[in-house]
Length: 328
Image (cartoon, rainbow, N blue to C red; front, side):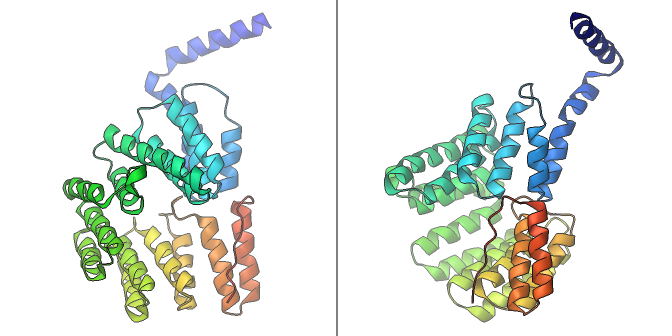
């Protein structure tokens, strides 16, 4: 055994002498690249298999745990997601995104917890979002999460509309569209829906990717039962997404608005199919959820064969996902 071990050490030294340090780093990170590609494609089962095959140590373990957190989050396995992200934070507490996603996972746990547990978790969520924003003051996503938390949470766990307004002022300099969207949330919390609508329209005008902001406007109209304006906003989002290769998620979100409203299922099907055919899929719009919703929409349209096909497509990507059906 010593001879073989010595041989492996010599081989490693020789490889290191031939390959530059950057090449060795790329080789070491290649499994993480493959995991992330599976994550973005919504291939949850493949991503988890790749994660399980990684060695239980090394310099990349924090990133591996972070990716596992996001896979579990995508699968709506909140406890497992929080545990994986917690480990990533323990291994590398200076990474803003690790704290942001840990806060998100804890937030979902809090939403499904008892009152006392939710109270304790709420404080942790605020702390994680705040830490993420402090570690990287230019992390607009983390600031948006912190601001949304401040809108929804009471002051006793760290929230408050005054704090949300301060976050919106910070976002003005980084991402004006997100700033307007956060002010819309603040206005809606105050039941000032006129101002909320104005802010959402301002977010559309300010955004470099208006399709995504248009889906937020459509969601606002859905909650206000303004169906015609909702459908018009969804169609505008669809049109804008067709001109923006990075805005495929807007197709998913727009279809989601129609899905929840039980309106225009044919358009929702078209948008989900276009999203699944696009090159801009993301874990924040999981492909297996898109297939699951497609299956339900096909059922509503009376297309049983297509419904079974799409539900099978969801299971092929994520066997652990709990398929949900909405009955009329």
